[in-house]
Length: 284
Image (cartoon, rainbow, N blue to C red; front, side, top):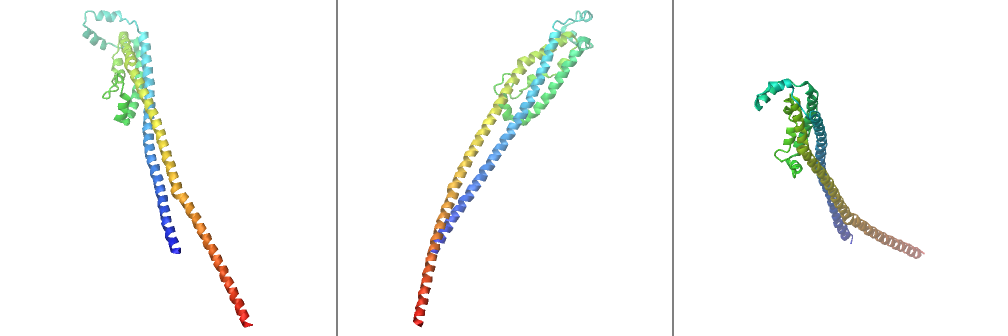
């Protein structure tokens, strides 16, 4: 009986140990897998947010540059060449006029707005360079997602209008009021017609990416919680409840053994008493 009990308890104990170890390993595996996925998603989302922040700065600088160009074009809306230049260029072809004007000193009236345009353009160019760093780090898949659906951007050359807008030679080549008028007007029209719609499209796609990242993190957390609850339930039903049942049975068996031992002890004591009485009677 005792041998049978020991075999039964040993077999049952090994099953409980195996179930307990399996549940712990499963919890650790799921937790580590969740950590890996969460870490990868956090890196992607942080990269997108960093790129979004830099793109917002770039868009603000480009807008300031375009607004400055718009103000300059309005200031020189009716440009007139000086009588001296008109007389000097009389009889020249268009090509000869361009060559002649390029060799002329900058008109004093356009020095200040010209310097202002170059200042705003330089700030926008620096913001553009910083943004391109995060753009390249994002990789081709993310870049392709942002460009998808854009009217004026392609995956091969997504920023051709931005590069044209930030071409400083357009401003540096200005010499007269007409030059600064047409250059600033071209800058404003390039921004309004091409750059601004492209920026708006990119910002919408970035917001969509961030929303998708948030939903993906929510689904991942929900999946992890479900797995966690399932493993806890498995641990409860496969380990803790069987252990409790096993301990209860063991206690009952111990109580039965203790009761039988007490009964045997009482019988032995009664037998000893009877034997003592018998011997006492015999001695008399």
